[in-house]
Length: 220
Image (tube, rainbow, N blue to C red; front, side, top):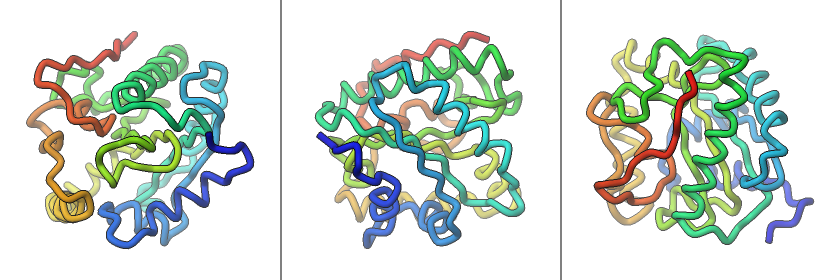
């Protein structure tokens, strides 16, 4: 069990700093001091949802694509550290559903992305902005997803759109995939190109069954 006094922000920065870590975007964000880590108690608890949203909304409001490119917001949870991949996946989607159920009363879904999890244009939306979600789990089979505590990384989708506009996205994506295969020892079979299939299959980090269906239900 992770002790409350453990500083998950420092541990996350050490996680990204490790040699060979594949995400060059995260490393750039760390170098620019643009990783925002907020620590909460239990990923399964619904009592921390308001606090999470308050922090996330502040992150969204402060973000400026021209000044803060390569930024991430991370919710790191003190417990539990013994979830299996399937249990973590369930906890991740439960948390995202809980956050959405509150957010939908305050903000519309980002119009630039779909709210249908089966759509190839889906992206998770909070605060009116689309996010690509990365789940981190102490018991993930993939080394690049194996953080000391359960965590949810929120990456603003507009950053990927910006890279596409600059014709830099494909090189950025391919570099990360190559490094991830080297870091983990094999290629991540859950990865797909934007527009080919829904990105939801990449969120939890688990190797999903072909018949897997996303449990998320949009309320708007």
